[in-house]
Length: 46
Image 1 (cartoon, helix red, strand yellow):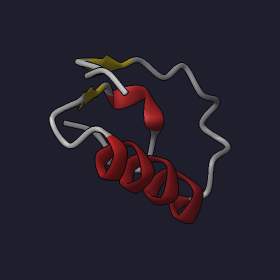
Image 2 (tube, one colour):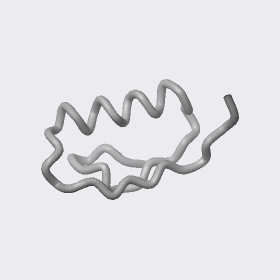
Image 3 (cartoon, rainbow, N blue to C red):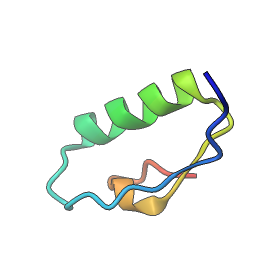
Image 4 (cartoon, one colour):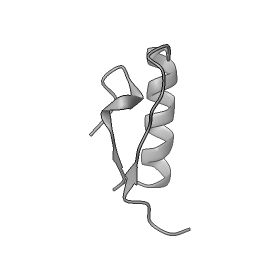
């Protein structure tokens, strides 16, 4: 698998905190150096 530098999310603000954390943690597990924008919600971004 190649490196991914940025994950750009455009998700409705309806995600629960648990859902945001799960997505963030999954991206970081697979691509630790990937930057995640602030539209993932609930303070889960870089």
